[in-house]
Each structure stands twice: as C-alpha cells, then as structure tokens.
Image (cartoon, rainbow, N blue to C red; front, side, top):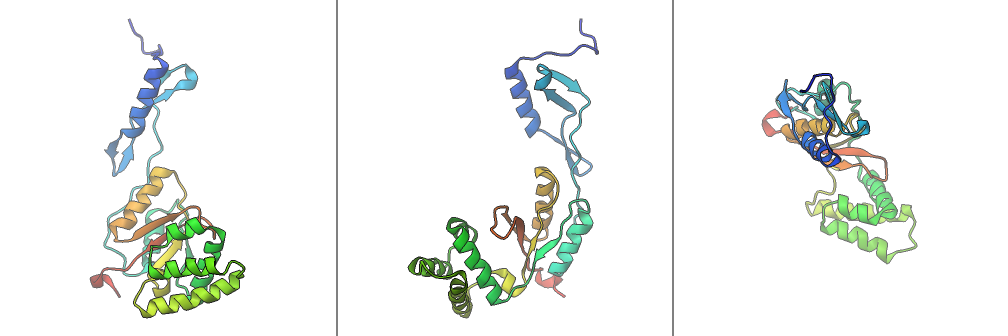
Length: 217
C-alpha cells in the first residue's frame, strides 16, 4: 500500500528518461510555457518531489509592427521590462563600419566570414588582408572603407547599420526560453535577429528591421 508521505523510488535509467521527457514537455498556460509540476531529484537518490514549478516565462502582447527602429526598441522594453534590453549600436558612418569590420577580421577571420553574408565585398576584404599581412588595423580600415563605397555604388548591402535599418541590443537577461520569447516577438514584427554572443566588440544581438511600407512614418 502506498501512502502520500512515502517517496517513489525509481532507477537511475528511469530518472534520466523522465528528466528528458520533462525537459521537452510543457503545456500552454496564460500565454506562456509552463512545465509539468514535477521535479526529478537525482541528488535525492532518484526520488520524485511533487509540487515543483519551473519559473514562469515572459509573455508578450501581439501588436502591430512598430513604425521605427526606436519604436521597436521601446516596444521590447515595454513588453519585457525585467530583461534589461537596451540599444548598444545604431546607425553608422561608412568609416565606422570599416573600422569595426577591420577589427573583427583581424581578431577572428572565421567569425568575420561567418557573420557577414558571402558577397563580393566580403571576399575582397578578406583577400586584401591576406595580401597585406603587415598592414595595420588603420590601414585595413582604409582599404575596407574604399571597398564599402565601391560595393554600395553597385547596390550591395554591406550592413543595415549604414542605412539606419539595424540596431545592436544587449542580450536580454533571463534563461534560454525567456530569450527565445524575445526572439519570437521580434520575428512576429518582421525583424531578423543575429545572435552574436562571441562578437569581438562584446556579446550582443544584431536586429535588422525595416517597418512594413504601410507602417512607415
């Protein structure tokens, strides 16, 4: 006979299986994701403790896409007030863009080639650095600046920061699932998010955003 006060012991293999099932399971509750109210405690010999609840997730309100990038940031801050979201990078001059790209290319070539979309100007930048191994960062920035000007004349998009269609934001405070909610909110408004946790200039999210034509001021 089983009494409520007794613990239900399970094997280590059952513990692992149940833990895995609980991690991937969930139910929709009040617009957020609530996990089952059961916690497996391997440190207690594989016993089950009832009544445990995972932290609730941020919920967000579906609204019309903001009309500006500044409005997008304000809407994020309004809907996720506890995640300390702030803009860390905005519109840039060609020179500043060239300096940042030169810094990244010198610091981490693999990251440079991964973050920036493969295009003629990226190949030209990479080739220039390879061909000038003794160039200083300032000289590389000079070369990159000219390459950017030439690319823009061809109609290429080097960075949306140059056209005031991108912002860098601080990585939202919170766990993985809470941050995923912020990404979903951004995507619902038509924004594109690039997670740059290993950026040479500091971890951040890059957000590309062009308000729908009917929503532009």
